[in-house]
Image 1 (cartoon, rainbow, N blue to C red):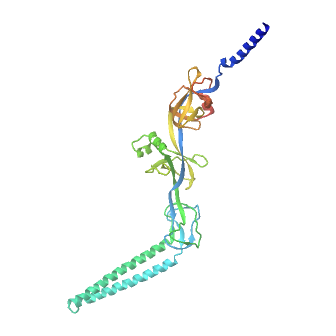
Image 2 (image 1 turned 180 degrees about the vertical axis):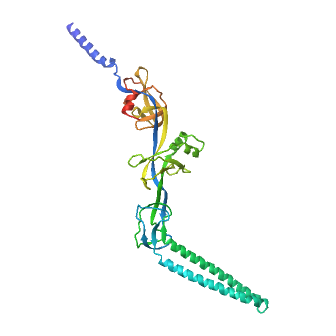
Image 3 (image 1 turned 60 degrees about the horizontal axis):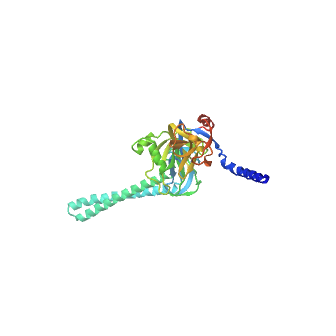
Length: 377
């Protein structure tokens, strides 16, 4: 009997040891929970941009020759009409002298032809000679007049070439790099420098097709022109992420998408009175987007599944359910949400990667105000 009681006791103890883990309730995971709230804010969509002066002119000589003088230095500011370069003009002065000589000879030929016409006219009237001789003389006179006009044109062309030997600034602006030195042989195909008018700067940037559609939907108007008028002033973030002090305006959109990139180009204009930015600078154009009483969701609370963004909403019995949200904008730390959640919904702030639908959690409440103080918009 003692042996039987001992065996029964052992079996009972083993049975209890095996059953206890199955009967113990699963402990809920403690996770921070924050309510969805609304706020008003201005966010910016940023697009990489390249900067160019409003006018960029390649300065090329119109005549070939040796570079005799350089009147300006690289980086200097010049006014329209100011001399920049001087090409050796001696050969063109001699060409002008030759053209003037030819013009004098052509005038003499005209005078001689006129004398012949005047002399033969009375003889024809008196029937001393045939009319054919007079017609021949008049034709010679016309040819002489035409030759005189050609000589005048040659003189004008020679004078123009002499004028081209002095290269002047077509617009006001800053001188770029000057690759040639005094004494270098230059021709019409050589760019002596680039002259940039940077009192206003063009910022060129591109939008993808989805961004372009969102841009059109964001602003009122029946046409692109009307929508551009409704776009507020844009900002320019420079290469060091500082914000350029003057705001700009989007002025034009390219007529078609680039097939190779699938993007369309925009152009914004920024004033540049101090010449702070130059042609070749880069930056980011920042287009503002105003949100009024918009729902905000912390980025840390979201997770991605394929091309959708989800959050876990805490429901009855502290069980979580995943919901897709529609994002209309974002800041550094938050998404602006159109639908999927509503104000007051409690969402899991951190730890969503360890959850599944229907799991129960132990909520650790956080206030939206404290979160916004710790992580501002």
